[in-house]
Length: 219
Length: 359
Picture 1 (tube, rainbow over the protein chains, first blue to last red):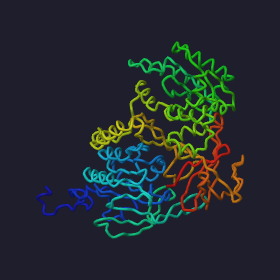
Picture 2 (picture 1 turned 135 degrees about the horizontal axis):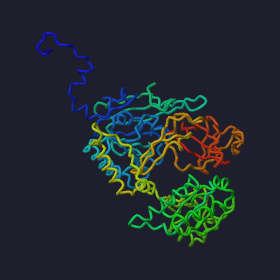
Picture 3 (picture 1 turned 90 degrees about the horizontal axis):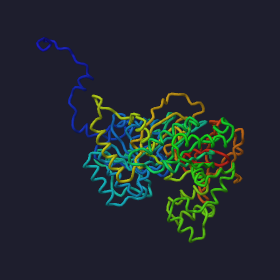
Picture 4 (picture 1 turned 180 degrees about the horizontal axis):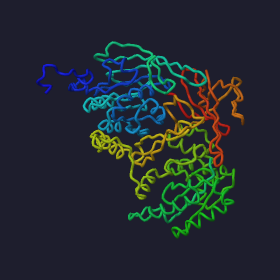
């Protein structure tokens, strides 16, 4: 009867947006949680892209890589972690990663690239920490495969063993500082985000990772 | 290390194709669990149970050993070899020799073993050529020298030889738990996200296919999944188990007084690394019986050469857990080093260990 009546009920705005068909470009982006949503151009990780997280040893590189997983993990995407010897599972849970959908290959025994490329077919985000500087050819092959499968590859590297190819997006930790009280309270990380395309202009931000509850937050 | 009673039942060590070995093993495990609820089937044929609690309950180690061997005879009809020593590695060796190693002489027992018991043929051949015939002579080598000459695997064996690790890498059959679970008829809870109508989603199928491929490439225990359980410290709360093994659902909501608060270290070492903590006069920092430090830490020595300045520390947070069996006393300290790294250290029986890195 509404169809014929001159006055149609006004639909709530959020319902209208949810009824609108999703655009293809949007589904090609994996969501990011706080605080990266506001800091990364596009607000998400484009599928098929390679992200490099670079930090000196022990200065928060792995935590940063894990914090990129949180939102997509909560949405039900699978994640893989290759080459990280002793992942801090409790820290992952505190960050908000859903452990039911994370596969770990802690010691790939020299076959890190092969096992990474095996996992790429099945997961949506893959964190890789190469044991040493990756060879040019290996990196090229892996990035091609990532592009083809529509996965997101997050490489955790150190300044001495940088990823040999330019990534689509890079997070470089330039400074890390702990704030303490009677225990470790929070860590402030100064992160430079750069990349290609819309992320072309480098920007520098300070984020809290982890905070008192072990989560990532904006300052 | 915990004093263990190891039972070696030769007749149950070979896995028969008809599954009879597995059934008998399960029956025996359940019978032994009545003796001690912490009984563990480490590998087919090898059972291990902590001795301290049961020996107090049944009135002496001999009584427990007698009951254990009677249980094996009653349930399976086979004879068993019994051995007592500290730690899984030594307990198995003791069982094969049918020896009860006296309290405190496990070190001596291990050092007297031939080098072959470490289970690496390469290492044994090389060591014999070098004139190192016993585990003890291998343990006396400096770990840096071992690292230069052998692979990282040998470094792990070296730690076993020194008594820093209490079990060999391949000593435990990681898939046995899931096989026994199958036999008990437990439903495998693989903790999966079900699709809209209760079935597995397409993305899960894809992930499982990829997981199978990795397993084919690297072996059954290379691919792990994680779960949380209750506990006070990060390394107790997290469990990494091979993919496909049954995960026991545990309620995590229970309070754990004295828990190490968040944030937790992003790298939690499964095998803690021995470090040394010195004060400003370069003397070792000790933990008193009351859980206080003897001096303020000033340097952290990761190895002989890598020494790092300690900028700040917090703690110690003492933990005394399961005093009725293990009597485990530990104290945790958070340390921030000169370059801005933070680490979690634990003091246990007079030594410092690195257990976590806030990476």
